[in-house]
Image 1 (cartoon, rainbow, N blue to C red):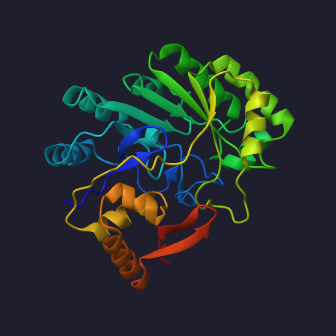
Image 2: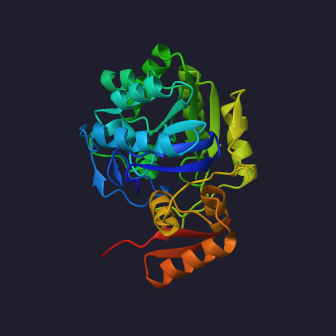
Amino acid sequence: MQYKYIFGPVPSRRLGLSLGVDLVPHKTCSLDCVYCECGKTTRLTLEKKEYVRFAEVKKELDHYWQHNADPDYITFSGSGEPTLNSKLAQVIEYIKKTKPQIKVAVLTNSTLFSDPTVRHAMLKADLVVPSLDAVSTSAFIRINRPRKGLEIHEIIRGIERFAAEYTGRIWLEVFVLPGMNDSRSDLLLLKDAIQRIQPDRIQINTLDRPGTLAGIEPASRSQLERVIRILGFPNSEIIAKVDGDIQARIHREDIRAAIVETIHRRPCTKQDLLQMLGVEKHVLDACIHGLEQEKKIIGKSQERGVFYQTVKKS
């Protein structure tokens, strides 16, 4: 079975072996972040609805569980904002009822936390990873390019309300880009917001894959360490690269389809794909070569190597 709405399992930086669930069509989001590894947002929206039907997600999860070992986490992320799907709560409840031993994580851009129904939908998750890259309106617009009507201070108040209601873990992610959101004044505003939210952990991230905006550069380790010093939060970390010891094994008849399915959501290097797919290097090389020849994928050189992504249809 070729899946449309679940992907991986992916060896995650943060969660071990993580099976992804994508609840919205490709690049349906409330933000158009300059650093997004999935590309430019094509449907910039705040509309909540059943973009992907609960019955279809349930069908794919049931099939996966019948044919594969359990992952460490099931993670709602993918190529858009998962909280836009009005059935998020039902999917989480189904997973917790059917596979209570598997942890559930939600990776969110935080823009819908002001909605009580969205906050309630995530209460049964084991881990929520909200993003907060900027507090000043100018920096928020510069780095996140929000849908009209979004106001950063309302978003922060929503995160605060959720943190007060939620009994699971909150890891707040801050994405740093030099010259965009790392001035001392921006970071001091962020520090104040973090003190009000009181997450369990702060994770400092920067560009690791091709972003949306040409010319943006990742922060250096020394720049990220400076951010941590200014924020002054005791439980802060710079997110490490993918753990090479995590070995994912995807049992798929069509490795080519698995490659396309994976990199459509997030660009990957060959090493990333080897870890995810569990195939021999010569098999992966042959599949990538064929897909490049057919112009279905393209490789782009970055600091960490060549990242493969799907070719956008004109």
